[in-house]
Length: 306
Image (cartoon, rainbow, N blue to C red; front, side, top):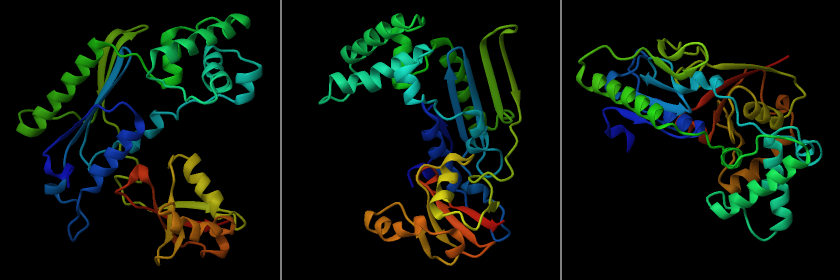
């Protein structure tokens, strides 16, 4: 109800997961007529912008009409993590040394205190310990800014880039609200420090993904072995291209196979996790998947047994 009161929504969020949630929420507001077509009066244009150093992007999303943020999820790889054995035994990169100081060394020397990533004193301690480890292994590149980037996943902001992207987003909102000019179709990329091109910008149409779980109603098909368990299916939904967080699953007939919340329902459905899918559903049966990252969207999944 909060978002539905606006004529247009402009976003400048600082992480992928928040963008996914907002994108799914706005797409979930779209209603359909008797013919299955989107009701134009329920479509709220969504303008999204972001920057990364000297580069940035602005895009216009017309929910259920154009491609949405979820369609381009593959452009944003999951946050990188490092094997614990590499961090502890064979560091090769500055990031390994920083992770060692913030994950292993901090808990060892401060067992009763959680690392406060907003504390300059704590971050200075991590930087100094990481620098010492890097010097020991002849690794260069550990700086205070790099330490902040690894620990807090911070990407340096450049004021000029932010100003250009903000102006591009506002320009699109003005066009959408006043119809004074053709709006962006659908993506603008800005590069402020290209190796060969210098400063340049270009636009292109980002095509809608045919099986996007958010902006299309396509039933996703998965082929699984009869011996695979419900827990293995959930893990594939988390680790695969859908990149869900904590999926809950019900059958098309309304039978709850597994529900993450509330705790009582999670406990009641937990025994199903170790059961084979073939003992819970029939081949070709459709499942409804919900997830916090797509809170207002239900994903329909058809499971076929190999």
